[in-house]
Image (tube, rainbow, N blue to C red):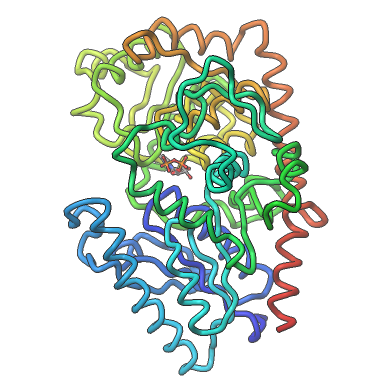
Length: 451
Ligand code: UDP
């Protein structure tokens, strides 16, 4: 039975990599007896099929097709702030009037204005960080002046508490880019300069994964680790039903993928995806295609516009060795016994998914936090290898082929497999009863219910 004292609105930015962890968090709260409502934009609501939580639209000012309608990222974010604040307030009033008052807003860190709405109604406010704690700590170092912005090329690696030495190219790309800066960066820095305004700061990670950092930063920020936010049945086979995040901005090709995978031997397939946002240059795509082909391994490649993106000659040459789809249920694919390896752009969700499902990775970062995640995949957690770019900034087909070989049969492949299984167990433990993340969520609920 749902507890009438606890009603949480979980507000997400309308991108797949944000909807997934925030919707999963809403589902987790609902599974523990709270009433949880996911709020997102009008055109995104249509893509959500999850039924254990309520789903309500608010407006970003572009109700027909959202972001694409806006003249620029900045125009979109400005409109979302103004119209979103108003419509979120209206939603809270609607719930009060219907006898289901909201007592907490958990909001995506890309929507920092939501804390003002929480304050206006005198209810709890909690920010949900969709990056790793390590990446978040770098933004904090900028705010506190421990790291000069934009970070410049140093001859020596950068040293920050709780983190391994990092080269400039291993920092989140926003931090090293010269002006003009990404509008997203302004939002991120705004958020990190006022973390103390929140009653909770949630991070989609787990304490064991970033233990050194958590230890070093203790007392400096009120971080609460609640991840990995991956549907429960992938972490614990005994839990049935929670097999999907519950939202797809693109139509998955599940039957086609599963049928094809069924015919492949265990751990023989490389799954390759660059997430929902990366736009890979044609020249790079070509190198990936021919690198895959040269590896002579089975592969399943999710690429949104295969016909325009992939070389015709490649598409007509792959036969039964490869399957190219526009979008898939990534978790279902990664969890399939035929899939043994994951070539990933290292978006934070994909990284957590590979890690939580114990799938060794070839890390091929593009932008944002991905270079840092890729570095950690290889060096900190030892669950994969990271590709190297050539002087043109491209990963050559030879390099990709070599990395595939290294992760599959190279000298360190055995250790990578062992580490992958170790982290899979650690992820499962963190979210199971008595685990660090589960305890943190329970504590939050307890506080919420106590007034
Ligand atoms: N995803 C998916 N199918 C695909 C590609 C990606 O379901 O074909 C999901 C993936 O499981 C992950 C999310 O989309 O949860 C992408 O988030 P991530 O942080 O990895 O990357 P982003 O898209 O934000 O760059």
